[in-house]
Length: 240
Image (cartoon, rainbow, N blue to C red; front, side, top):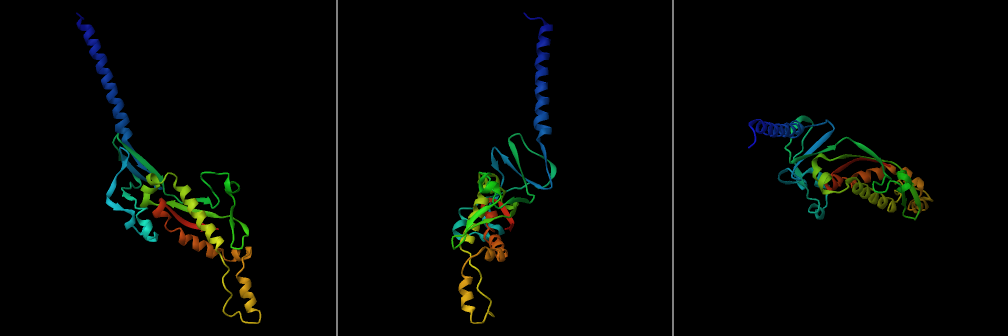
């Protein structure tokens, strides 16, 4: 039979292992369970992979959904989730995961392609075709922020939100350029050549686009209002 000294050594070793594991678990899941959120961040906590919902509320009841067409409301019906604001320390359980998102304003080139950075001359120039089949190059910037009201779409609903937003923006911009027409002449354009000027105004030139860039920018701002409800990214301004 084992001697009492050997039994004490075995029990002492086992007790040390248990105490060591306990300390490690406390350090990892106790102190390691605290987290903070920076002023320019927002966070969403998931439990076993599921984000905490705000009841049965969806984004279709929020102001950002007002620009969606009726047939789009069902497609982009994202659940509202509980958003953790700046501050802390907050505590999370071991089965929970914290997803942090920067809500600071970001700027990208309108020619930027997230999936193919070398496209559009390395993201510097976006090509478009005018109504009279004139090839033109567009440059500019797009300012955007992640929508705090629709973090579910940004984090969980869309695989690559910025790629969707850039594709959406570029398709609308190219459609606008393709259908652009110079505004009609002023009402006081009276004279023997007024009719001729009216016919000439229906054509398209680079100067026509340059003179009406403000109209193009305002159109893009208006047409892209639904980006926050669609993809969780709010387009602040287009500078073309």
